[in-house]
Amino acid sequence: MSKQIEPVKIAVIGGSGISEISEISGIDNVTEVNIETPFGKPSAPIKIGTIDGVRTAFLPRHGKSHTILPSEINVRANIYALKSLGVEQIISLTAVGSLQQTIKPKDFVIPEQIYDRTKNRINTFFGNGIVAHISFADPFCNELRDIIHKCVTELAIEHHFSDTTYVCIEGPQFSTRAESNVNRANGFSVVGMTVVPEAKLAREAEICYANISLVTDYDVFKIGEEVEAEKVVEVMQANANACKKLIKILIPKMAERKAECGCRNALKNAVQSAKDSVTKAPAYKDLSLFLDKYFKN
Image (cartoon, rainbow, N blue to C red):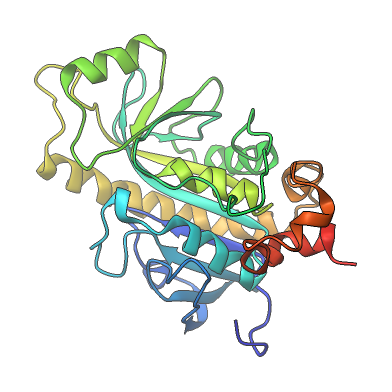
């Protein structure tokens, strides 16, 4: 990262439906930065703009023109790039299918839990000489969730907050009816393809992370209302319009927040490797952005 770039503490990772920060009205002073990371390039150049005086970074996880499959996303590069900018809080936007009759298309869900059904993804920064085990019992920052909850309530957006679980599948295919019914029977709320490993890597990077799931369909469990591309696109546009209004009031409230959560110190006591071996490990150079606060003399 260039030393001339002023730190940016808040980021939005956009998914299907909102792919550009410029789509949100009232964004000022938009610039674009290209960041190289030890893990490769992020999905796209990161755009930085000002929302009500708050500098905010925006990254489309599927690339500028939605060309990257969920399993192809270089999530380590995305999270590392945002961390290198100084990001401390991330709002993740995702399009999802509903797994419950009471969660309707166009509703917003602020998930409390994650169930990981992915198969082929790198889900840690660690290894190559450094072993770390972060706490992940509560995968989303509950302080951020509370702020989102207040904002969607203020805007009268239909939403679901308590006892909500996002089940993440590998994709890119949608679920079979059998898979959808099993996920429903397990009590999961919504199904998507991108929160994992994003949430895990954000926690390893000690960044507060919360998700807003934008419901587009009833997955395939509801006979006669199976997920179809045409219907999804129509609902997605309505969700995007509501989400743009939400982002405008959410970002300033995030900037005012005084963090008291444990996300910012997730790596404290998490590294199990002997202290004198950590800085000598091949991985340390790449991970010094995260680890210097604990291991640099």
